[in-house]
Amino acid sequence: MRFNFHLIFLYLAVGGLLVLQFWPGRGPVDSPLPEDYAPYAVAAGAEVAASGGLRAPFALLPLPEELDFAGERVPLEDLHVRERMERELYVNAYWESNLILLKKRSAKYLPEIERLLAAAGVPDDFKYVAIAESALLHVTSPAGARGFWQFMPKTAKEYGLEVSSDVDERYHLEKATLAAARYLKKAHARFGTWAAVAASYNMGQAGLANRMQEQRVNTYFDLYLNDETSRYLFRVLAFKLLFEQPETYGYFVPEAERYRYPETRTLRVDTAIPDLAVWAQAQGSTYRDLKWLNPWLRSRKLAPARGKTYEIKLPVGSA
Image (tube, rainbow, N blue to C red; front, top):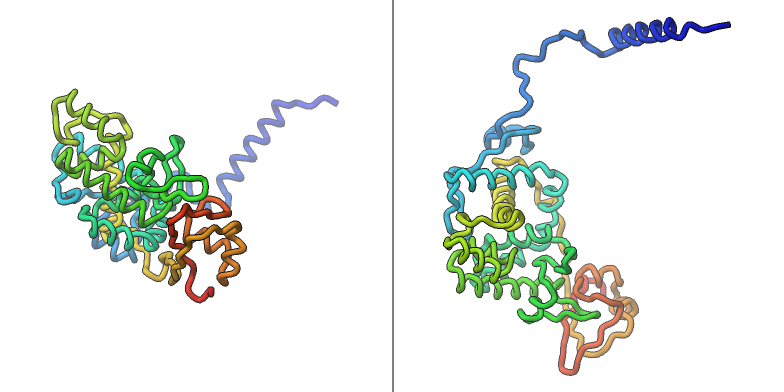
């Protein structure tokens, strides 16, 4: 028996169209869109607040009329500046999962970073440099930079951090932040503006100085730079806007939803610990909590040099 495949195909095609036409829940093909339909909306503070803090999907994000970094005005009237600023704002605002987790995570670290920067005389806006560098995660870059402030080994040692197989103070929140503050103040003494300081943190002081000399300009916003450094300060500024203006950009994270450190106690150690897991257990704690609260401990042992004392944090109540 011979089949007429063309006829069978025709029957199947007609049947498929009929099924699609009368499928439950499907409106007529030519039904008009609602009169108030829009593929995006312009975000406004009042509208965001009225919606319970939720930003409309695919909203156009407004820039403020005035914006500053560390007290220095950002020239948003410059079209190049404005476009670069909007790019970083959209890229980071629409990476929703990253931003929400970052806001939750920041409650653990930003208060201490703010305190340390203020004590060192560095503008508060530089806390967003740490966010732009590492998202407040203990990350390692392909080039070998580590920690919240992404120090390279050589630079870390130049600014007083210990880097060894057992101890890497690039992961030490307090010590690394103070080292970053020393770098930033030294760069400010050289360049004179905090915007240039931020750029130098990304590309190095020598690299920035060379670009300024070659192009005969002395402001970050007038420089033609590699893509990464060209975007760098604007990424920092995007985080500043998203963190400081939740009513405008619609990212509210209630205090109760933010991550917190437990209350801790500090133990001073100046003798060798051959097994940190055993030692932590002897202190009534766990190796997990030891590593969580002291990420600068990079191996399972600790061997202080003569005269060297380390301060190790453990949760209160674990004694």
